[in-house]
Image (cartoon, rainbow, N blue to C red; front, side, top):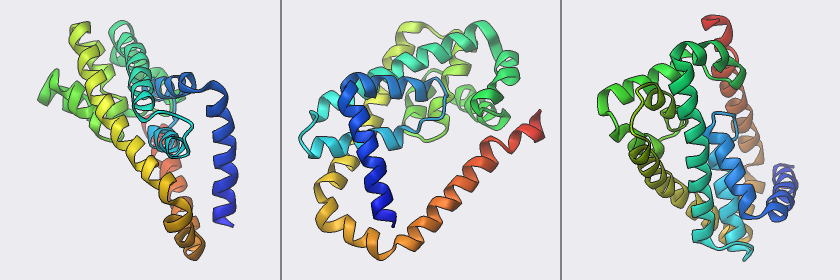
Length: 208
């Protein structure tokens, strides 16, 4: 059941990315960096699996992902610059952003300064929110773009490689285990969905 579902979803994603090519990767990663929920982990690893199938070039996939991250991060930067923290707190809930996310990004930026723009790009969660405090603080645009690109390039390289290895070994290594442990995998997926909903939507009631 799980393997059939995964293969069905993969076929849909395959057709979408195959239609728009690298531009689809750029668009998807830009959306993620603009804090609209579209996990880069899913997009880039799947793109990496398409590299294994011969549909894409590895480094072009990585570059497309990094460029998309930069585009979305610039958008978030300007939201922080012109709207400030009050604007983000008021409207962030519509993008599933709550105070915990912003507080985490603020702490990172306060502690590491401009270097946080680079290091945060290598970490889940905070990587998509670090552009807000950078914009609020009005850090210089040139180093912001450069550090965002380098950090995103490394992140996309890591995810694309994982997807490449998965795609290359899916039939011989991963598929038998997916079939064997499909109930456990389904349970983990359900737990992940519940956690996501509680964290991103349930916080609305708490923080307003």
